[in-house]
Amino acid sequence: PEIINIYTVANHTAQAPQQRAEAITLLKWFVPQLAFYGLISLFTALLNARRKFAMPMFVSVANNLVVIAALLWFHAVVGNLSLSAIARHATFLAILGLGTTLGVVVQALLLLPSLHRADLHIKFVWEPGHEAMRTIMRLAGWTFGLVLANQLALTIILALADRTPGAVSAYTYAYTFFQLPYGIVAVSIMSAVAPTLAERWALHDTAGFRRRMSSGLRGMLAIIIPATVGMLILSHVLSDLIFAHGATSTAGAGTIGSTLAMFSLGLPGFCVFLYMTRVLQSMQDTRTAFYLYLVENVINVVVGLALVGPLGVRGLALSLSIAYSVTAVLAVSVIRGRLGGFGGDQVSQPVKRVVISSAAMAVVTVLAVNVSTAETGFGVFLRVALAVVVGLLAYAGTAALLAARAAKHRDGPRPRSSSGPTAPTPGAPSDRPRTAAGTRRSPRGIPRPPPTFHGRLDQETAIPTNWRLRPVRSESEQEEEDFHGPGSGGDR
Image (cartoon, rainbow, N blue to C red; front, side, top):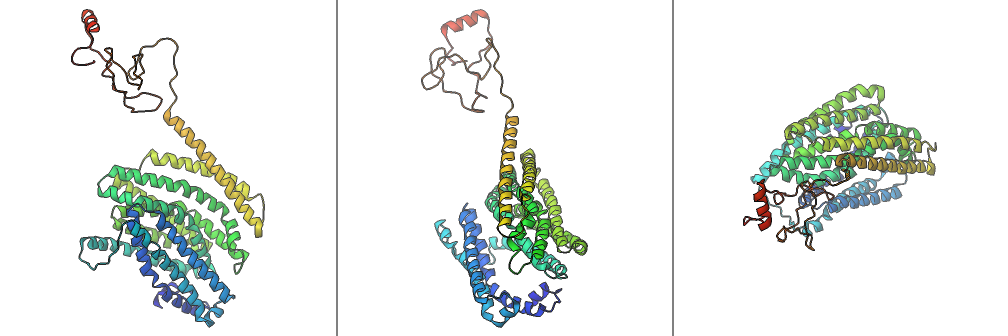
């Protein structure tokens, strides 16, 4: 009860006592999930260390399917989704609590076959004094601190939102939808990159660590930046499509759309910040991650206090976007200083192309979504579908053109062949006889191995030329050597 009272400290509505009572009941059903989520984290980390990424990603689908089935069952049994109807039957809350907890249990159990195939056998041993446990506890102390800081900031934000009826729901729905690109794209890339980063750092391979970190960041931003643009443009239409039916009115859906737009502004910063914290964890530096989270939470609360008055729940969403964007820049600067660089043009140039392609996508998406003004029914679905399709085509086409232009600029113009005989240059094909296998022959007829490829396919670059060079001699010595052939020392 004390936990629920903390999160609802600013809720003074007439329904607050009933809401707290039902929340306490649900929390009791949710508590077992903590143990299973811990097992899921452990199993996933072990599989990722063996470079097994597919199953940990797909088992969450099974969790969602179980929860969806529980929600459909709940809707069929309850019918009237109101607090008074739920309060009359404790079984209704049991369906929700047990269904969501069962989804987490299924997710954990489905990882066991993958562990067996990877030859990972779990055995629980009580050794709190083990060296590995001491390291984990040292790192977990800072992680526990940042979790507390996050929860404290969330409590303050929810208390600010509770001043306006429906604001907490709008904030929660918009934040959940805002995390969709992060959960699909950023988490997948982080999970794939983290084991390699930890390995490179343990081997003191700073250059390899930096390359892998930069490649993961490029891949993430290549999808997150256009997703940000699309979500910002389509926020209201998406909200109408998903929320403007059932118990949510059109005005309520509009509030969710506005809140989602404010969240969308901070999506790149949100993903970059969390990516940088994962990088710090790979370096076993949870202390710096704690201080970065502390800065983020302070900015979020301070800016939220300033913006909640004039903007309401939209101001709270904007404060989170500002907080994560600022601390993302700070985290990048910290890691750049730690690694002595951040990838240079290997990161900046691809990101520039992504930004330009996203700008082209934005123009096309705005035009497509305004072809119709439908706000309900199948019409709004067609608006979203058309905008998404043409936006993706515009982004992909522009990105392909920019990539081809960059490749052409990087390779440089091809050398033009000049007319007339020219003197042979080192590395150029000669008229010496060749064997059937493509090897050269010396003037005495001894086969030579073909030159090793060291450059582009259309040029024989960096070929050892010592066998073509001959020392400068007098004319008589040159003629004598040509007559008798190379000396006993081999070809010159």
